[in-house]
Image (cartoon, rainbow, N blue to C red; front, side, top):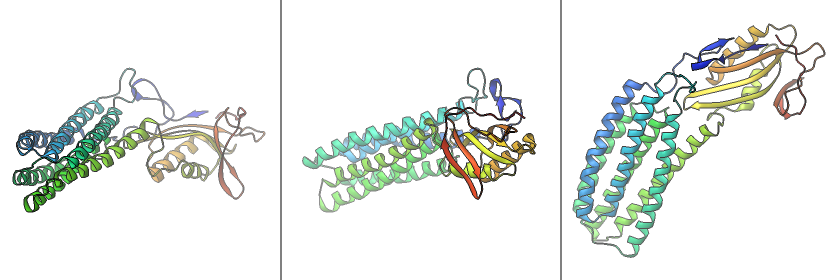
Length: 343
């Protein structure tokens, strides 16, 4: 039997081989901290201005934007913390390190957006029924300034590594706020030109819809990581077919593909090869195929010979893919123990 990627404490290889363990996962911490810090300073500074102006102008749209900017600041601050923690080396009980902290950050950001969307939807509807007087000129000037500030913050975050869900969470917050300022500016222009005060709560409802969209996306993507779904764009059936297409491979079961954190796919599988194959060479070939075709470099592969009787039954309850004449493989579930001969 050959076990690839078997690790001891702190993720160091103990036996076999574990392809690409040393390759970079996640973000470039030093560069990203700089970009995140610039965006955070811009957002916090303008948020303070917006709260004052929104209260003076009696604009719910501006106050909604300010509330969203508060979550922007929280999202970027969480991303900064996540980047620092994710960069720490694995040790003790945390054999993957703290890389999944960024996913917690993204989920917190997404949930915050969803809560704010509900709050501002309710308040926007109430103001549609009973609209207050809005000082449109003051709102328009502030909203246009907000567009400039958010463009600068979005640019700074776009320079960071957005494969990190934490960074992407902060970026989505800022971009949503940019659209919100545009909507607020349009509403303020309508108020100035026509005097229709209901344009302000209409803009608030637009902002709430944007929050709902961004929040749903962040919660969904972070949820996929927590539920250990296969990475976006990676079909486990295609992975199984690629494994079976490797010379000498006759079966594969216990195949699992998941993400440890964003940009860090991992795979484990029990692979059976024919009696004539060198299982160590087969494992190396499989690692090369998985890295080249699917970008999966963190693998744990147990490679065994099919036994002399040709048995290749899977482990109890295992998901199995077997090679059949003229067929790349079939997925199924069986309940018998395997009878393979170890390498």
